[in-house]
Length: 437
Image (cartoon, rainbow, N blue to C red; front, side, top):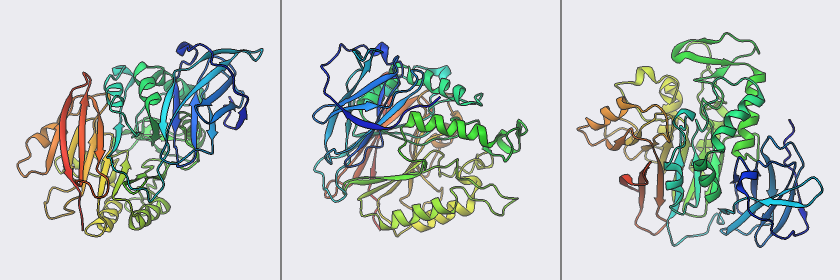
C-alpha cells in the first residue's frame, strides 16, 4: 500500500514514445509555490521518472502500480510556466512509454505586479453517475494559471478502506475530462463531505452507528477517516498534512483554501461548536488582515451565502454555525478590501451577496461554482430567479465549471466570472466590482 513521495535527480533519458494508456490516472502538478511543485502520476509500472523541461529528471520512489505516486521538484523559478511529463520504466530499467505533456506555473514573488489578469478555474461536485463531466476540459481550454477543486471531486460514500477510497478516485481520474483538466494547469484542492461520507462527522469509535441526526450525518471512526484522508492527500497532491493553507499569486491575489469538514467541533447543543476550529479561524482572520494582495479569495467547500427560504435545511454548512459565520463576516466587513468567497456543494451556479439585506455585509459576495455533474438544485435556482432586490447576479442549475479573470492592481478592478456549460458555451458572464473599504 506504500505510495512513494520522495525525490532525487536522475540522468536524462531519451524520450520514449507517448502512450497515455500506460498512465490510467493521468498526471498532475499540485500545490506549486514560487520555487517548487509536487508532480503526481499513476502508471502501469513500478518505476517512474518525472521530466521537467529545462530543469531535469527526477526519480519517483518505487511503489505499486495501482496507486498514485508523487515527486517534489525543487529549484524552480518564480512566475514561470513549465512543461513536464512522466516516463514509465520497465523492470529491466528500459524506458517503456511517456505520459502526455503537462503544464503548470509557479507562483510569482509575493510583491510581483502583473500586467495581465490572473485567470483561474474552479469546479465541484462531479458524481460518477454523471460522468464524463465535459465542462471541465472546456474550462481548461481558457489557458488557466491554476484550477481549484472545491470538494466532492469524488463520491466515495460507500468506501470504508484505503483501497476502496482509492478505487473511487481512480474512476474519476481515469476520465478524459479530469485527465485533460489536470494536465493543463496546476491544481489546488480542498475536500467536502463525499470524499469521506455523506455529511460526515467524526466519531471516536471505529464501529459507530451507521447514521444519526439532522441531515443524515455519516459517523466516521478514526480508521476510516485516516483512510479517506490518505486517499485525498495522494490524489490532491497535498504537500502537507494540513488541508487549510494560503496561496499567494504575486500582488494580484491570495487564496485562502479552507478545510470546512475535518476541523469541525460539534459540541453539545450550542456549546463548544466550531465550524473551522479555533486554530483555522484565527489563521484565516490573521491572514486576511495581513494580506497585501489586491484580491483575497476564500476557497470554501460549503457556501457562506444565506438563503432564508431554505436555511433550516442547511445546518451542515456555515449556516449551522452562526457564531462562527458572524465572527468571520464581521471581521471582514468594512475593514478588508477585495474579499470574494468561492464555494461548492450546492449544485447550482450562483453569484450573490452573502446576506439578503443590502446594508448587511455590503460588497461581500459568494460565488457558487455549480456542479460538474450531479443532482441539480432547482430550489436555489428558483429562489435566485425570483429575486426582486438585485441580490443575485446570476443563477443556473445546469452543470458547468467557472473561469475567473481577476484584474491586477492598477487595472479595471473587476472580477470577470464566466460559467462554462457542457457544450463549451458561456452560460453566464458576471462582472463583479472590487470592494474597497
